[in-house]
Image (cartoon, rainbow, N blue to C red; front, side, top):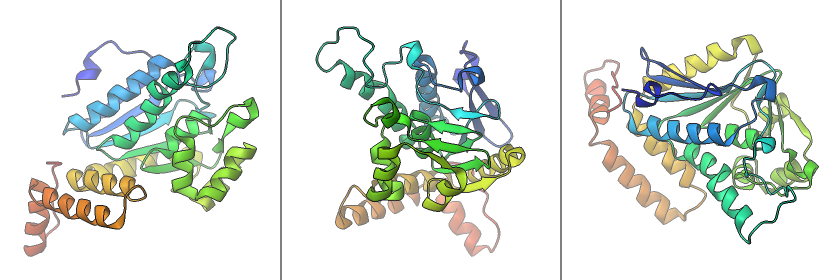
Length: 279
């Protein structure tokens, strides 16, 4: 059961679960504000990622933005998010900015990275600042032909935050990450796809259909195997070979105790297509 849908939630984040295929759709719903993220939206997104992990009936997640212009234009600084290192002129205690970032934007990015279900970003328009990082933290990124990505921090005199350096270095390497972060130029979707920031580029009118197709396919897959694979990939650049191989062996051990793991083997022996149930 999807408990969060039974509670009174902000209209700024739409959450819809397709009960037929177990796909959770999360839509940033502030198109007039460029879908900039407020603190309330951030907390709801974090809660939904935890819900998706815990609920076996949610088997894939799609994250997108309302409208056709903006995916997410960053943190809504006017709303007092406290996610960036901008100084609003008020007196701050030592460490307050670091605490705000670690407790805000970094928690959001970690929630997406740590979600045990596949998360797809359906980027319908401009992604800027933390909006870029929100997309890059997802497992797969499908972008409309009209989309673009902007590491906007340097334009405002700010150091990149919200996990940007961590994500970009792993996705495109240190040299390209520095170029993106140092200059803050608009990156058209074709270039984003070429350098490895985007999985697939599609016409804007097909974005929802392709995202739905991918999510449905993932939701029908072996959920536990996908979760373990996600964890291994996310850890791959942080550990040495011996640790990576040991974790891989234990992941295989855990997977083979799952119902889907056993079903996959039975289906192979019986020469039929497997039916995975996410258990």
